[in-house]
Image (cartoon, rainbow, N blue to C red; front, side, top):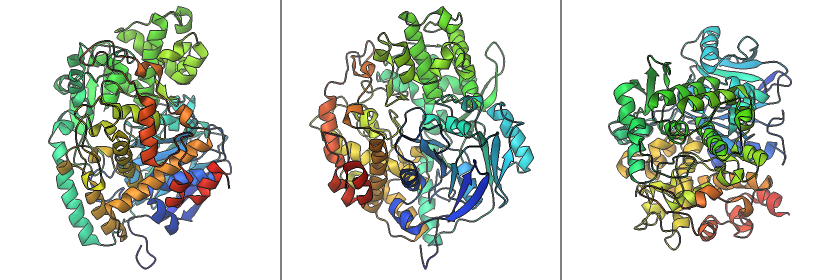
Length: 638
């Protein structure tokens, strides 16, 4: 901000009350911007201030906040992100989910940094934020339609084919607790059930576009910083990530004994080559796709042109989907996997949670905990692709056992009982994704237990094994990142807690600034290091923010999210791993690996973070250091 003018921001919030059918505009608060910068940082403060403890995520009192950051929609590489923040109906704690595409940039071009949706409509509606005329419109004619169908209709209705649509499918309408918000047809903001929050508010979609400019405080300096950053990140587009997408790493993970298989019983799949990025590129890839402003292009546009699994062209089959929907259930072929991915996208449910639920159900069936009567006659077996697709349809339709699985594996296991909890793989209610605490690295064990404010997720704040599995410094050496230990399986005494803290705070910057995490994961010469981010943000906003300053802001945001969860009752007692992810791996190169000293690793990490070891709360001293004295009064008392 120079002379009272905000640079890098649209400067406005659109607040939409669906209960009153009322829209108002608000100005961004400069004092909060300097404290939280933007994105989920600013949104976390809004959620902290707005929600009472114990609010039902499906109640009108819950908020859905579409968030951008200062870098969103600018020349900075990989700045096509949008984040959604809310209280999660799947976990009951802080929820956030990201999508690429063009929604984030087009929201800023429409003249807004955030949309805050509150209340709930009596009838289906959608929000049009196009041509400086935000309005709530009737959506009765598209309620019940798939994401692809509804998106086609909405783009025609608003008369702007370049607009971006964030839409839910029948999954969100039916309140499947891991329903996605789908952006630009196939970009999934999949985790934590944001689509179900939209469904509870009868909000089918948000359509955005406009022609407002984003101004830089120092245009020439910002241009030079952006050009240098694009050249660096663009190297990834010429490597494996660009050539094969995220699924290009599948074979390497399998060879390392780090590919979750058979509901996390092992981390090695004998038929991995049939599910690889190379096989996808050879037989089913139509072209690469990239989000707005991305020089990498990791998206895959795929199809199955004929046969029993015929699937129309769509964006899909990235790594998480391929492992969770394909490898975990041992499909053994990409064609049914591509079909399953398409169904999840167009009906609007998270592929990670859905795949986890299907693998859980197969094991429960195998153990006799669910029967043919529960499945409607479907015999669930490992490697039976047709049975998996039928079960996915039951989840989408909320029929038979699918109705229970739509509640998430935590609730399903509690309902089934009789030992089902022992192989329900979730953290704080969020289904574990396609990376394992034992086969990958022990940093991931800490991340699943405490590192992610939204539960067991590998990518938010960042993929911690970049440090000890991939052995990359990420440009964090000058900020104190320890050198990784000789083995990724060492647990204590190797400064793992210190490393995790710094990695997480660096990763948290992605959702604050509005960029994709792939631009921050890789070799130091091909990513947005803290130094590069400092140059970009300082030139854009006019605020002189060093790498240390950015990490301090990130620490404040990360700590506030933890406090949100503490207020909801989360503490050290909840910072656990599922039993399955503590057991020795059954087969493969990492056979016998297990997590042995979780509590000692937690102690080290709590100390590094400034959290009380007994309770898991950020200490009074830590909160004072971050300027969160008012938050301290809530979680510790006055």
